Length: 420
Image (cartoon, rainbow, N blue to C red):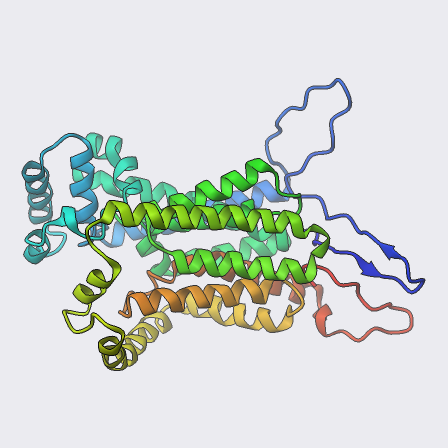
């Protein structure tokens, strides 16, 4: 695929503005007086999308066939779904409890039911229950898995599309297929959980950034809306903030000619994050973050002084367990390792900024909830990892890793660009 380029210095001292490369889906400008019609994607890009979607659906079917996808947290989302459908609390709880017991999905967690679910921190996650209303009405409690499955397929398409902005179609396809071959990724994305919705919205926000075309009022508004919706799906604020901040800093360094566009986009995303945080706090009242953390630590930590000893005791064990589970999935390990290699090889590109921000987001989430999650809380890293691996595969395919190539007298030094 074409690479983003920025203004470069030429020997004559003049500055030559190099236009951004055309988008994979961008069409030539229509002639005056001619109606511009939408055309279906075709060629390698369309075939690549079909391969990624086929791999995603295959992973989804295999996961459904091998494991039951109703989790303990699914109880909460089902309760709220029935609540939004007009059921009273007691009736909705009984339907869900009977379903869990009859289907043997797991031993019912009585303490969850005794803790008044309508007052817990799950309340801000209204997007999945709202979208699940028609599916639960059609299929019963098991319908809670429909929206996450659709979101997983859409998320992988968006990740593929995002990767093709920075790398070729074959490399983007290979990186996307590698991602979905990890059972850990499919497991959390197709169950009755909110993670695939958050992943889809997080990737959509990345796509709305002005990689090739200047930001408009509509893209800025779209960024604000998407980042707000992320807060209604799942709280992944550390990922959103770290990613937007990192790519804005990269743009200030590598794409300064369009600093206004990048700043407007970052401001729109920031506005959505702030609005989502305020909204979540309001609907969660009278609970506070401190109260939730105190509950999560089993009553051991309410102040910073109490939290530090708890962290020292909890973090090493949690990290060790998480690493053991992640290392059991070789596709995921390969994805992580290659993304780090890509950050070194393609150090002049946006890749290290994306990968570093993904790790910062994962660290932030881990500090909020330092428990073994089997890569569930790390899922928003996926767009950055896939892009990094796609860029690396592109470089390997070219044969000589251009970032490390020494220019010869016949070969001028490469000009700086957004992707190296």
